[in-house]
Length: 375
Image 1 (cartoon, rainbow, N blue to C red):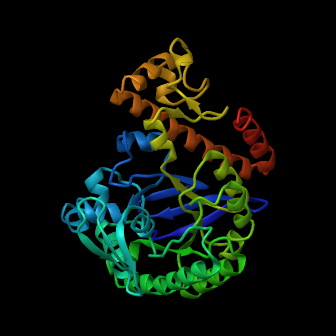
Image 2: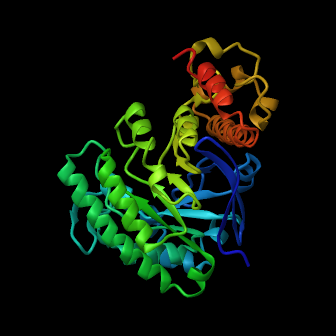
């Protein structure tokens, strides 16, 4: 049984391509993980998510512990069986959602006390409870619990949150290692924090390395700091983490963000953008985002993206998808989401191929020039 093995097959500058081997399957890197927050990638069947090229999806501790409940999912055989996805699942620790969705939060050394966004009931999410929930779900890649503050927070606030997150990382490690059979087949990732401060990021990385994790995430970005600030942080943050472990940029992102992050050594990504945009009428294409609700598409007989091999583009015209979306038909959201997930997986395959061929700079420049041409 392969618990967790990361292999780097090729490098081009800071960028790497390879694979993560786990019991439930191989994850090709750089990898994009569609977000299945509440045990579903919205508007998609699991087999269709897999057909798009996804090797792994993301679930969320906060949402699943509130509804339907982690203990219930465990009684029903675990998250994979519950949602019909047989390949690896990474679960977010819930820290971001506690801070962004909940009301009346109170942070202490123990954890975060919060009111549910669903019904106002009080809950406590601590490092130990977060890991327990992820264990009950049967997660393949478990995230340590951390405290998120905006990337633009004052240095004192960022430093305090980072230091607390590092103490929680130790607690997460201890609780994970108590997991018996689950710990024997799952992996645990630590999360680097420190805002946009290079020294705080380095201190965070050193603390995480001292604890020891299977992979390392760059946390606290994609929270309003902007593309240029994010890239500036990624110029140094990934290099502070172990070279022989996967590096995961949480919550990113836009296609051009992903390309720039891969250039800087990031191996894993997740974002709600392709699914959320699909439900609101935005299709991603090589020529930039396309708003299918626009009246100019009402008579167009070409696919969303000419040349795209996805089922939506090979079977349906822009005019029909425009009609579905404007009419509020469920099929419109399904077709748009399917195309977007295929686009993201094609983006990742293109990056993997370019790194392997040692032509990433050329490939990235061509992609970005075309994608941003109409911006």
